[in-house]
Length: 167
Image (cartoon, rainbow, N blue to C red):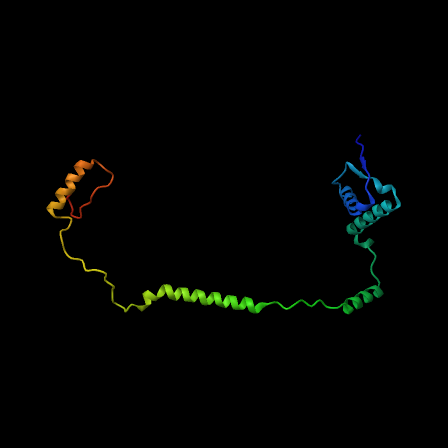
């Protein structure tokens, strides 16, 4: 048979004692028996917790409030001063969002300006290509062949644009 260990609970930690009692009633702390249940305040708390549990399980046990109580509660709510919140500072936020939109539009215009300023059909030419000795000249071919012999086999090879030239 298991015996429950008794833990004395100081009156200063009343909230902790209520939590311990609630955990004990919920079955979470079976080994810790709240000691102060032997006092009149502890017995009253025990009865209150059981009454709350009974009412939660069976709503017919709950006491229905009288019409006078409902009227007093309604009047107290109406007489209560409304809570007025300070106005929000939206003008700063609206101004900053407008500034962000303007910056985005300006950056798009700045990036797109070179493409929009060109006349249709005109192509910007940096330098004219002059026809010269291409890859098919015999001197360049001999140089590349000599280089391949000295450099040895490599993964990179020169490709000819003429069909059947490398066979």
